[in-house]
Image (cartoon, rainbow, N blue to C red; front, side):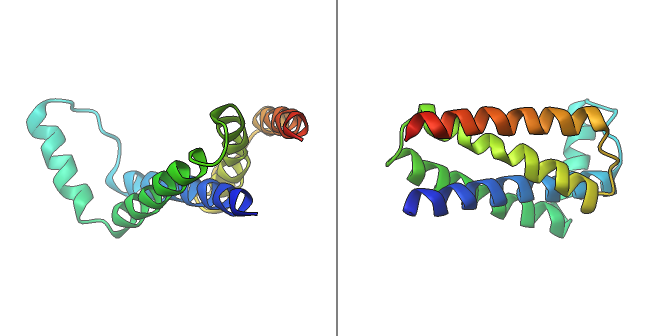
Amino acid sequence: MTSLVLLIVIIITGTSGELCLARAMRGLGEVSDFHPFALMHTLARAIGLPWVWLGLALLAIDVVALLALLSVEDVSFVIPMTALSYVVGAIGGASFLGEHVHRQRWMGVFLVCGGVALVYAGAK
């Protein structure tokens, strides 16, 4: 039961953190100048955005939960199971970021789900 809870935490916090960072970066605009001064200016602007801080906090929770899960489960089980984050990412991209997720991407997400099902079935 602990493994299932940790897996759900990993999937939700990791993907939510990435979605928050994506939302923050869309607010900043495209990074096109990669000179050190320009990158520092972009970083300074990003630090002021609440979405960045929320995203980083969620990703920190994700890492701690991943470490905890890896302490009780095999990596050959954990890493494929965390691929379920692709489902949450596609749904979040569509609903939270307003992205149009094409049919081909959905097919890829379902293909990943099939692979996760195979890994889960093999673990039993």
